[in-house]
Image (cartoon, rainbow, N blue to C red; front, side):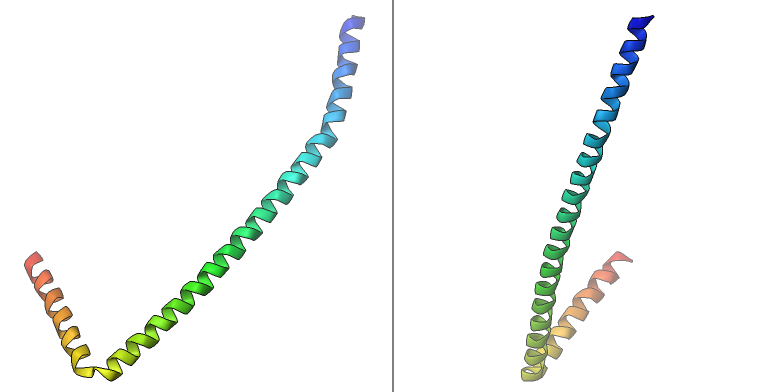
Length: 92
């Protein structure tokens, strides 16, 4: 009976010792996770900014091309419309 009581007291002591370790580990994991999330957000924001700049630049170049070559732009639009029309007509 004394063996059981002494093993219970030893296991209770170990549980109390492990609780601060587990809490410290959980805090470290949370800090690492927060740092990782912040890094991913920063990288995603940088990629979004870069993509936005590229899209704006492409839109400007497209507008300039259409202003400089209106006949070619209209012919291209008619050709694309014709291809879409033929593709849709073939499906029906």
